[in-house]
Length: 581
Image 1 (cartoon, rainbow, N blue to C red):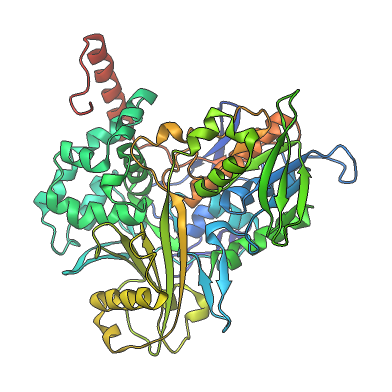
Image 2 (image 1 turned 135 degrees about the horizontal axis):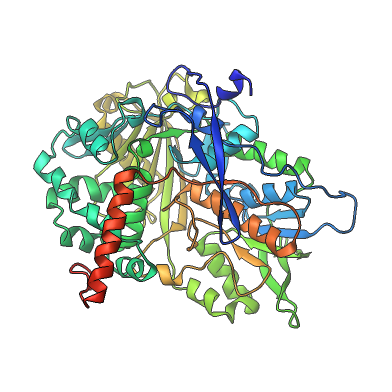
């Protein structure tokens, strides 16, 4: 590999090349192939997103051999053009499948789809972060040969009506220590109003982090609790809860702690912040995700024969009553024309709301318990705004989290810093997103823009003198997964009771991979996993390589072992957990 191949899409300032030498270890998990990238360098040395992308090995076994013109190609229909659907479609198309990717939107791209205003200004359904452990997405960008896709890793500011609460540094640029110790040391002087005594009340939660997923029964008990109950039982201070944990969860899992599963919260905390010191580091697309990644990805799928059809809403599912296999789906376009798409294998890679509508319209699905249970699940409302100002206003942080509303999260981003098309814009361009935004949904666009501008100015007073000259507001009802208490049991697995029907998306359960929570990486990995299940079921092609997250650090492994041992002895003595009921 040439040195320039290691200088990829994003970096911390100036790209820094390194001598890459990584070996890959194959790990077989219930028939699925994961590759754990093992560094042949000091893991405590910082790595840029570009270097993380270059760690990915090439495809295992090379491309499948097939006759593109033969009638023996298996037909795969994938419903949903987001990270999960695109991931499945890309791999199956490269493995010789006759792939059709269907999406109800005329502009396929899931929640990362982008639009342009009549004036040609770019608008996107929320600004998406790409975190340190997004190994598979970074590898995809490398495979597509894309350059200048991501920013550097950036710091973030956390704000309340009283001013700046704290900031998140770029941890990978700082000396690396064992996880949790490193995060504590490097943020010790960054909290403006939260005393050390309050921050130390997080320590007892380490016991819950070591315990929550030790076995299915334990996870189910944590899942039944609210995150607020968990924090109270483990002694988290009210100040830490109100000023940091609650606003963090409102933008991480899009709901207040009283509405979130403790199990889901612990999983997200561990994946995004606590498993390793640099895990909280995040970079951003240097334009819309649709234009920077999805459009080249669509082109790569079409080059190998895959078909992508927007404006195709699935209205029914068909089954062969003799074999119990799904034989195809019917779609309806905007003119009402219906089309039957026959298939040897089908993947539904749509969100909860779309899946519920499909269950309601498809008797074949509605009679199965696993699909009936999906009707118990809920989605959360999201609003994405974009504001154009008449002047440039300097900002302290390119990414910001606001704690201004009791039950709603808000973020805002300096697009002049993050996105290429606004680097030289005469005025500031700000994207601001609201999560759990049900209270704002009835308001007019003008009222939402006014509130957004007011909150931004409360954090950055320079905006008090700036005027909004253009704005866009996008509302999405029930668009993202709600990990509510007790919802785990109603979430489906990727395998269904139909032998050739599989599910993908960040909301499915049972994924044997470290990516958790509302995660683009998790959604993409479920798409690759669903593709592997299709490969197994049809006996055509080879598995996609799936990179696992970095393994647990030694002290975490030891802590989990001690916890499991103590629980084993306690169970023999008939002693139950003192915390969970």
